[in-house]
Image (tube, rainbow, N blue to C red):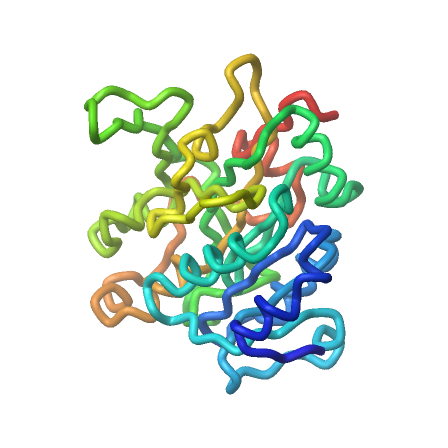
Length: 289
């Protein structure tokens, strides 16, 4: 394992960042650090970088396979600040991905195809970014798992997702091929979720380029990066299956006492397989078969 500061990583890590795809994983607490890193290593990322405080420990099987960057991920803009610095440091065209601990990338056919294969196809379709939906996971039994995280007994909502037009603040008109997506725990418990955090769309996979910046709402400065498809046909989309909202709702004193269970009539066990997400319409294979 290489452990460096962010500044050293940006100046000395150029060789390992040159090829991509690169996974940037922001560790906010000590929950499921190992499983998150293993999952993304298994996806086939050329480089996996863990941004995490020095106090957190890494499993011994994972540590030699990643780069560890000393970083405090608890400020609201911590991920955005670091991602933007990485964008500025890597070669244009390098594919980057970012997520948080206890989040897991799934894309069509990920059980048999690497993320590099998927992104090579996406690049051939002249796409520089990929829409991902953040699908909330939660423990089936909060008495057994009070932090709401249970890898072997996780649930997700099979329905209750919807989209609204995304308006251009300058004109008030809908932006072309852009929508705001909602659903999951952020929709069902929206009274506890800040307005800026209620959407479930995230451009988690994207190509670096000059002057590109990630904003606090998980959108990008280049509006084409924020589109769900190209003008001529549907494109691939992916999901980030995430315990992050469930963790926050149970950790927050203002919400935890009012939530005895996240289960409802549309809860189903999560199968940890891309076929389930495709069947539920939570991601799109586009023209990739």
